[in-house]
Every structure is written in C-alpha cells, then in structure tokens.
Image (cartoon, rainbow over all chains, first blue to last red; front, side, top):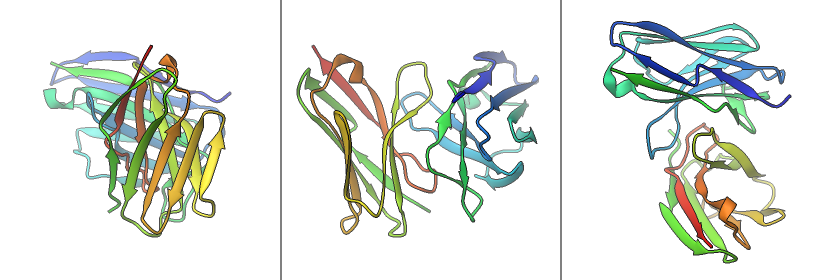
Length: 118
Length: 107
C-alpha cells in the first residue's frame, strides 16, 4: 500500500466555521507534512511532524492547527479562515527523518483537499 | 533558508522531441535532488531523484544530471509523449519546491 489518503476532497466553509482536513497513510512512514498550494504555484510547506511530534511550523497563522493522533494519521483543524486561505491542501509522508526533524527522501503526496472559504 | 530557482516556467515541445528543465539551488550542503510531476487534480509524484555522490541517473526516457560545482540539476525527458504534459517541480532538501515548469507536448 503506497497511498496517502486525504478527506474530504472538496470543502466549502464560511469564515466562522470550524472544520478539519484528514490524512492517512499505512506505509509506516514516520514523517508527515502539510503543504498549501495556490493555483499555478508550487506547494508551500506548512507543518512537519516526525515521530508524531511537531518538528517544523513555517510561521503558519494559528487559525490552522495541526494534530497527529498517531503515526498513521494527520489532521489539520481550520477555524476562522479567510478567503485568501482558499487553496489545495496537500498531505505528504516520507520514510526517513533527518536529525533536523524534517523528512528525507521521497515525499508521497495525497491528492489534496480543495478548500474554498466564502 | 534554501532557495531554488527553476527554469523555464513553460515549455512547449513537439511529440518526440526532448525537454530539459533546470534548477539552481543555494545550499552547498544539499545532497538530495528530486523531481516531481503533478498532473491536473492530483498531488505531486516523484519521477526521479539523485543523490550528490553521482552525476547522472537514468530511468527509461527520464534522466537527471547534477553539477554540484555550479549548484544546478536538470531534468531531461527524451522522446516526449502527450502524457508527459504536466507541471514539473524540482525540490531542495529543505522541503522547498521550485516554481514549477508547465510542459506541453504537442502531438
């Protein structure tokens, strides 16, 4: 099984809503990531978890709250978002973890959750 | 932090021609150089990678070359096919992606 599964595929929410994005992998990977991708732009790193601990937060606003309940699951909790937060949110995982707390080697991406904030 | 520049931003080729995309990085300690392909509606997928102890790696029609002195690495696709049309990203070891190249293969 070499898949990273993300749910939901599409999400529309208002600025006062609270919602969550979910990500799951069963490859035994110990590093998991959230990336944000705007149209016609590259993925931008948001968070990295290694061994279920947050190791990198790229100065992401607190309205995005990551959570790693176990080694297979990664959530992104959303609250009080702005319309400019509308984007494709990609989850990824990797086998290796570097001493700096980031992953090493190939990143396996899910297909993303397309978020629209009204 | 790590900076990676990718060129060109768009590339149109005739089916059967070759395509070359180049990335330049800043951190001389970098030792892992991947290329990802992203098709419409999907997440990026690794197509080839290279580590700093080799200068070139091939996988069928795809190759990656690395010049550590000049700090650049390139993706080479030979005998391009319409299904090669996608966005291609290089990535630096600190999880930073290049700006991307839209490759269009015209049949």
